[in-house]
Image 1 (tube, rainbow, N blue to C red):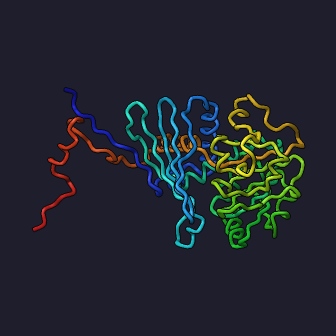
Image 2 (cartoon, one colour):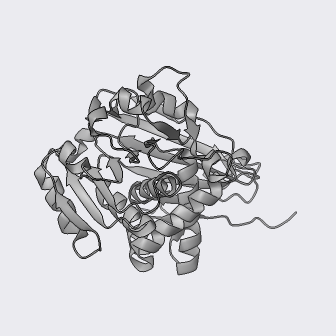
Image 3 (cartoon, one colour):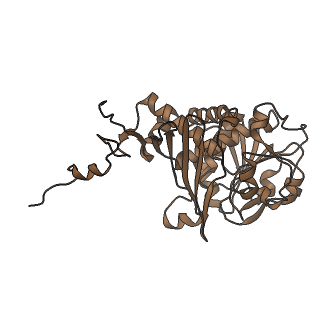
Length: 353
């Protein structure tokens, strides 16, 4: 009989991932995650895909987001609770797992709260590189909360956006964003309304948090050639764009079966025409029809992006020698005798005199 193999799972805590991003730098992390996302979207057909499983409540949502290819399985646990800041908690909290398809063994357990912000911004940039007009330099950023810095830096580093026109209903959020972006490159302009912020913008990013059918962007605010990166509408009953904005635009999505339930297109009939972004990246769809066309990326976040982000974290951790091995599953001398574990003395037990 072969000797038992000791198996451990690599664990990346929140402090580990913070240190990883600090050591590599935000720009290389955004670029790296974007590259992994792009590569995985080109393998679209290799993945077993499904819409996320959501448990909705009055105050928010808790979701599981699974996906797998032939070798690796991944899932993310994530919540969305807009009122959480009242209790000193983030509105979004997440962790994720990579596992081996052949054995089911968990290979990586990692925080994904900070990483979700990075991957969401990286995904926005991947879509905008394919859909926005070349030479876009000004972006309106509507909603200046926890995701805003990541969006700003992704568009600055990956698309060359050099001017940010900012608006939030809470002026303190805009002040926070401006302070955090000081010295990072892009010029920031605080605006007093959404209409003012989008004036002259090549790209408009909406990333608001309220769980409501809002109309952050209306048809009168559109301009020829504009690209809209709609990030905040990501669950049933939560939208940001007036329905006529969608009707006047070319609409692109991650995974249509999920976006029709959760995205801004939930406002429209089930047969409303959309294009999945992988088709554009793979050259199966031309993307933007003309320089004057208005494009919308109706982004809700899809499990494939978390798969890519977890792969990036695993590889970056290996490169930097980071993370700790943990015994997430029991070590068995006889894999057919699970009950036998209860006959062994736990190292956590001690005799109290």
